[in-house]
Amino acid sequence: MLFLQYPTSFLIYLWSVCCANYVSGSLSGRSYQVIDSISTQARLRDEINRVPAIDVRDAGGIKFDGDDWEATIELQNLSFAYPSRPDTKSLDCVSLKIPSGRVTAIVGG
Image (cartoon, rainbow, N blue to C red; front, side, top):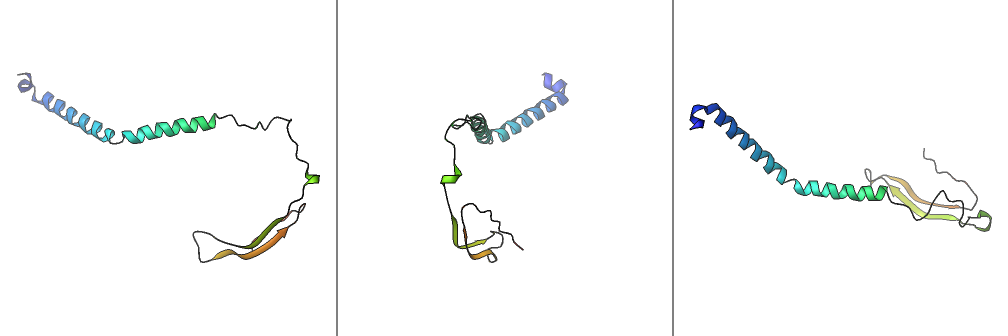
């Protein structure tokens, strides 16, 4: 018996087998996370490499002529509160009308 002649080698072998079993057992429970991350990475890579339907560098196409177009932005009874402070309204029943061609800023104090 070789193990009886070298008991230290047997203990090292036994310890290595136990450690290998522990590592493989802990990794097998995580295999679904590895597979999920690989599929997420593939979807992200596809989105990054996607060619948009509209080429923003193309000078041709329909041009927007702002002279023929008028729009008014109107807000009625607008209220807003941040989620961290739902009882304190930052905007409370604000109504405003912004006509076409105007630049408007809302500034808090």
